Length: 388
Length: 123
Image (cartoon, rainbow over all chains, first blue to last red; front, side, top):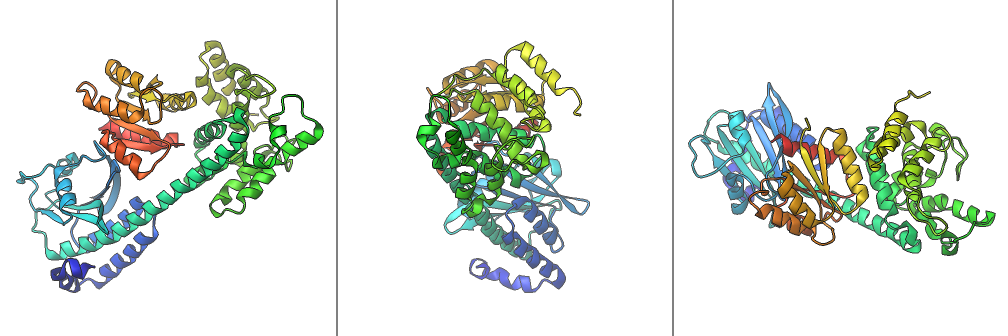
């Protein structure tokens, strides 16, 4: 690829003397292709690059993404910062020009250049020259890699050759990570469609899984759970009631009191749900949430009668949020409870039905749900006492 | 003194609550609007530092509201973050054409959204 695009440069690479540094670069390049986190992979790459050529910063800007990843070398190490674009499409004119031409652009003396505009960090950091290389993926231009030098120096063909390698590898990695993200979006759309299918069977629950998911993410984030866990929660909360597909609509929509048999049928939905998603590879992390979202902190829940820490943490968060949303919605057999009433009921269930730590955090969050100053005062009071 | 004023535009009340809480906890002042028309009016009268705008709304959708905000000299410099339930290329393109500065896919992580907002407000 390099030979086709820059035949004159291929020779220069062999002229590089520092073999170890080149090996280092190649090793890091391989790492790039395997990595999906563009920020950390670029940092590794920048460090490897800097041992070969004198660069002071490297930036990656993707098409249609507002922020730009900028790595600036400070005392030998590359420090990563995010630069937030002013517009998705609008950028400094040098990058627009490089993107339009699809060819590398060299500005040897930024200070005396009058043809282009540059991002504000260029002046702040004192960059004197730059090389910008568009990322190509087939005919599409997916982004731009720019390297900056603080010293004003003619850009050698060696530098150009190396940044071209970096750009083509980065282009592949970008493509890769975007495919993965696209796949994730498609997965989630499918999962949402499934959730909508359950809700179609039970019109009273329209929007329920969406609300539960969004609130549960908010709650879980307050406990600092990892990105992977948030992803599992997103799937698990969206699908927490999927097992209701296996419960008769007559029972779900019954207006009067349920018989023992009918209640037993409803109690089967978490296990049915886990069973349904258990066959799907990307939903494995969501299984404990679906199975255990009706467990109660004191061990009186179903299907397994788990208690306290035995109940997966994310299932404990979904339990509180699910309860809240169910009570504040109309049901065939009752009208919705008010937010204030529901909050009081959750307070009463701390340590019994609900995990105290999770429920207290939820109550603090929900103080914004009520306009009643008396209740919100009560709520901020509720969060204050120390836990036993 | 608030760290900034955020206009949250969403017809779904629970999203308003979530954002009200998340931004409020981080020291931002939050004002809300429930549809696109109201968003354009409130943007003019309140001059928020940033607007978080849902796409699917009654009366006027988020794209149209964004276009009008970006066409008005009084409000065109206010950054706009679109909330989209779709997250596909075509929506990004529409968002870019409407002049949006960034977008976030629902259901979103409030922490991430706040990071983005901070990025814009710091500028």
